[in-house]
Amino acid sequence: MNHIIPEVHLVKFTCPYCNTLSQQKWSDVYLYNSGDNGAFFNTTHLNQTPVEEINSSTCESCGKHHIWIDGKMIQPDSSGVPVPAEDMPEEIKVIYFEAREVFTKSPRASAALLRLALQHLCQHLGGEGKNINDDIAKLVKAGLDARVQRSLDIVRVTGNNAVHPGQLDIVDNNDIAARLFGLLNFIVEAMITQPKQIEAFFNELPQGAREAIEKRDA
Image 1 (cartoon, one colour):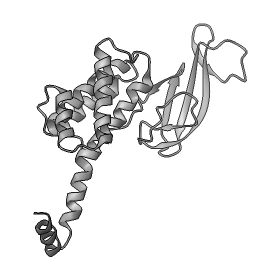
Image 2 (cartoon, rainbow, N blue to C red):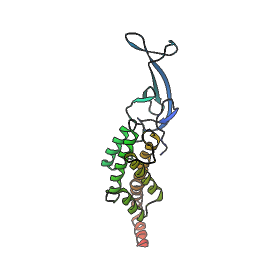
Image 3 (spheres, rainbow, N blue to C red):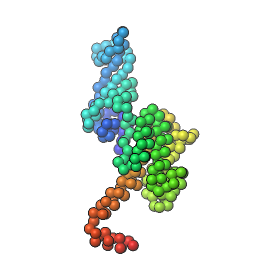
Image 4 (cartoon, helix red, strand yellow):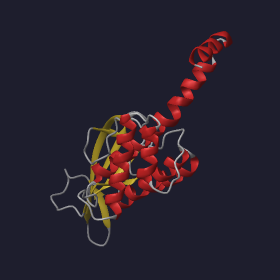
């Protein structure tokens, strides 16, 4: 969850290309109106007011370039939020990627989509998928880790506020919506990835040891 959303002139952020938190090398170019045609000039040569400020940041991890115009990243056309966890179910990844694509344009729409993704995830984890609050309560009764429970409720409540009047102002607050991506990935890793890894490790134990453990716990 160590993720920094790209912002113009930040010396370090998570690269949308390689999804690595890395140093950025910056260069600035300005667009001036030179009469009939616009042209690119370096600011050291002209004392005119620029029409547009164009910045380029280069990821020191993957070497790829990001293009910014007037403080907004236009290339790549990506929000810079993390990619979905590897073990996230495919139908939920579709919703996640949609939320990722609209994030910079509408954090509120992004949060609402992630709430929908959470609803599908709860169903995947054994809930009915109709009422997220009820599904979380069912998971809590089954012994859900408190950290996962809080992560579920954060995504649920924030997503609710995105589509209903509430106390969280998501419209112009990228930070609130951005956290939800990391939380959804955390839930997937805690509820799907880690149990799968533990099961795989357990199955690698000698058969006699596994049978002794199962007999002990019967």
